[in-house]
View 1: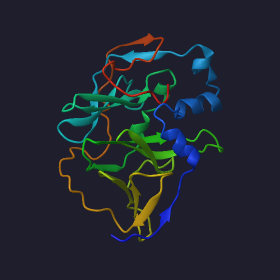
View 2 (view 1 turned 135 degrees about the vertical axis):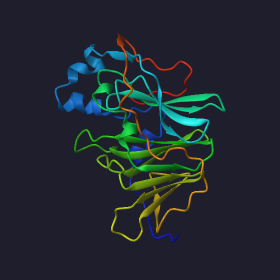
View 3 (view 1 turned 180 degrees about the vertical axis):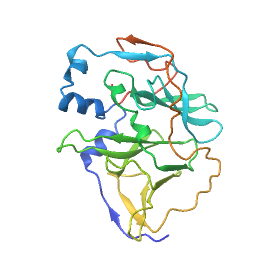
Length: 253
């Protein structure tokens, strides 16, 4: 592999917001409320409702036998739901994103939007996952597709693509000290961007290609959902219900 160039592709505003665990990340629902006359659905109106669906959790991405991501409390694959990271070996469950409010169920969970290949070659000291932040206006500064990379308690939001890019024909390799993003359809010679960890403002280096993965244990390569699994019933609540055993703070409540 040959390094070619280094480029800073995100502003300090984006990084400082997304790197804070409790920072609000705008959702599609926010855009609906502001642009589609949907303000009556927002919490400020007092009409916010949260759904509790009687639906089994489903594994949407599996790293290995004990590490996996689940979608829970969802209407269906395209409407709402919460993504958790699970590590049964360490007895860990972490809330990552999503919800089941009347706003959240307008669209799919933002992690399920990404359709590109993900090869997870990092140890359990690393937690990384895709998330999409949609543009709310032409003045938006934090829209895009991100890999949220967490190591040693530090959160690195890596802006890998625009918010309209669903990742098809791309691949992401997550390692112990870097994220490699390869765009297979680009006409350019240098198809891979390397985001080294630690990272500031989504700095990256161009490479000819990503290194070969030394991890053959990855069970799945994309975040995917089984559309045949649907709730048998639902009820409404006044507050968002999160698994009480899970750690983590909501980004988009």
